[in-house]
Length: 182
Image (cartoon, rainbow, N blue to C red):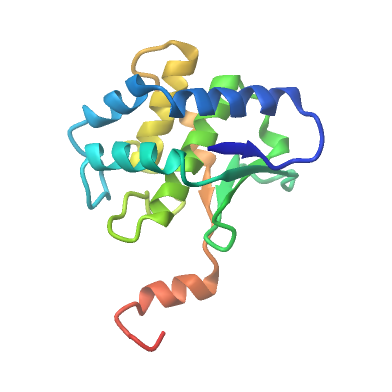
C-alpha cells in the first residue's frame, strides 16, 4: 500500500496517491501486465512481476515523500535502496497531469517491489531512458497513465526523467557481488 509521507495538505498528491492505490487494487491492471510477452532487462516473466506487485501490496507500506529538487533538475521522482520504504516526488515537477504523476508513483512502486525481491530482477538499469520503454518500470508506468487517462497504447515520455538513486558504495558492492566478504 502506498501512503502519504508528507506533513501538509497537498490536494494533487492526495488524489494521485489514492488513484495509484486504486490501480494497484485493480485486477485488470495486473491482467494487462501478465499479458505482456516479456520485459527487457527482466530475469522473470511479466506474470511473475504482476504476482509480486499484487502480493507486496498487502505487505509493503510505501511512503510518498515530497522534496524540492534543484531548478535545473529534470528528475520527477526517485527511489533509493537506502530508504526502501519511501518514494520521493519532486514538487518542482508536479505541473503535469494527474495521470502522469500516478504513472511516476507506479514506476517507483515497481522499483520498490524489485528491490524487495531477492530472487529476480526487473529494473531498468542506469538512469538513461534511451531504449528503456520495454523495461518493467517504464512499460508499467505507461500502462498506469493510459488507464488513468483512459488512452490505449499511451507512451509517457515524461517518465524518462524518473531516476533510481544508488549510492557509490552500493554500486561498488554490486560490482563485486561475487566476493563473499563484501
